[in-house]
Length: 216
Ligand SMILES: [Zn+2]
Ligand SMILES: [Zn+2]
Image (cartoon, rainbow, N blue to C red; front, side, top):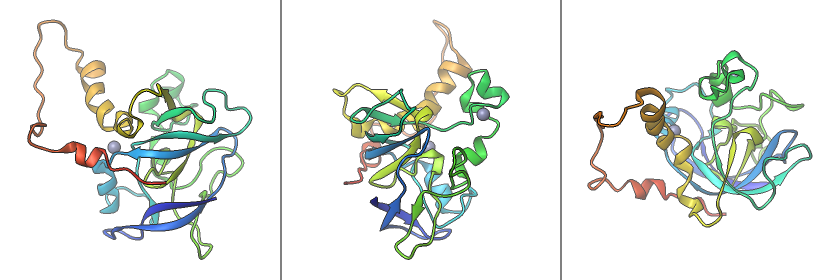
């Protein structure tokens, strides 16, 4: 199907809107109509060449949206469900087997290979340009700077429909990074103090970035 996506052509090139073709979902995959996406500094690092995603490619990794299609065998979500797209993981390494998906030993290629790593189409990208050439997608398993995202069923989290879906994408990266540092690593107890270092949210309009929506 045709989608609109923001493509980075080469290191330091701008995000340029372009019509692409995306494959439909294969085994274990979910097609999501993107409703909102955060813009994370990692997207800009990748645009700047600090992350080894082969370019050209579609970035974006804090997406939320509505499930459009799944294939038989995917039973954790169904079309119409509202979801946040989280990080992918291999599911078979030592850390994944222990339930520590965020420490997946294969996280590098899972996030940055630019191609599918699982299923019958492993090794190929689901994204094609108008001239027939292939480009990187599957960035953090989602490439959310697009009207549609092909992600893996294991990476999506269903959310209540009465919550503003457009705002939820950053829960999968920016917010879990901070919350994970506190709840999983620091684990402060009652009466203990923590120091949070960062910009004063009253002075920085992060909402302006977070609310960046990609229209269908
Ligand atoms: Zn991020
Ligand atoms: Zn793993």
